[in-house]
Image (cartoon, rainbow, N blue to C red):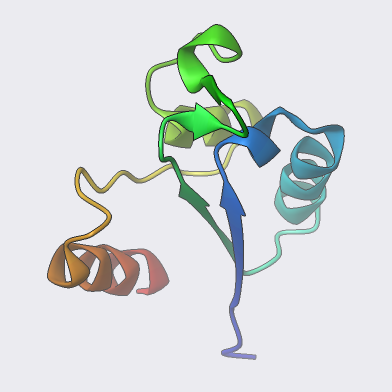
Length: 89
C-alpha cells in the first residue's frame, strides 16, 4: 500500500511512555508512520531542557532504528513541505 500515517504530537508528549511504545511498534512492525513533533520549547509549562537532555527531539528516533529528520523553522511552510516530500520518498 502507498498509505502513510502522520502522527502529530508536541515536545512534552515525547516524554510519555505511549510515545515510545508507538515508536517501538512502528519500527518493529515496519509501519509507514511519520512522527511529526512540534517543539515550542515549553513542554506543558516548563522549558523542555529541564525534562530532556538531547537538544533536538528527532534524535530520539535513532533509539528505535528509525531515521530522524529536522526542520529548523517549523513556521517555514516551504521547508516543512520539502522535508516531508524527502521523507515520504
